[in-house]
Image (cartoon, rainbow, N blue to C red; front, side, top):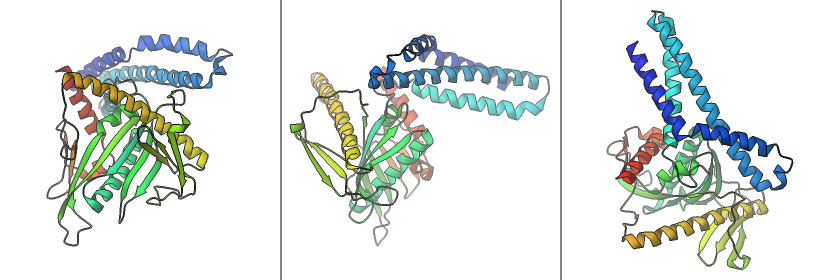
Length: 367
């Protein structure tokens, strides 16, 4: 019983901490204000603003409801613990299940406490590019695409594939996809960088060990209300027949769109929507997001120049290694987190790596 009491006290302390960093009292006040605005007759006169406010209302309501549910489950767990204390052991399994449920939800909230960036709560545009290593790296890029699709599903996010360029013999040269869900961008920032795979190559007739590289980039997806001034004269828009890995990756059509922003050289493509018009609209949304990201990076570069040069990310500075031979290990070179079950990691179990990175980043920010 003492173990259950200790766990209940710890969970209660974590819940009180969650209430503080989620500012539940403020959220309740905001909910009342938003409810009044949502009920106003003129609310939908500005659809973009209305959608943004509706989304914020839903998020706040979910936060308050979750914390109320956690309080309720803690109260129930205390009752079960009292029964156990009186010798009624038939409630032991139910108490264990309840404590596990509460702990898992608090783990998720603790992760959110590490995300406070301007765009962390929003959706993400992600890109994968095969690097050095030829066919092996192209195959590795396709394996990464599957890994992130599986991760998105496990995390409760939606996954929308927008463009895939097939490799010469196997795999893919690149892919662009959108991950939608609360905190998708904040979490996927942990994956930005070069990923290294070491394995016995299935493309080598002598089955020798090969090292492959692929990069992962992520940009916050700006919604329709975000405005970036783009002169049509600065754009080159090409249409073409899509080509990709086929199957699960892309629907081959004649309506693919490629947009080049001439001043910056940024190129975006979309080929997986149903029509050329839809592909163009999605490509423009991706372009706007990339231009805003570029603006922020240029500003940070100016600030960094004042403080002195910093090391650039390069193929020699991979963030994570996935080793399949001669031993089994996935290791993050920033946080030091390791997992020997490579198969499960490649199947999308990235949560522990992301959590470890966010904690490592916070500890370094505090130093």
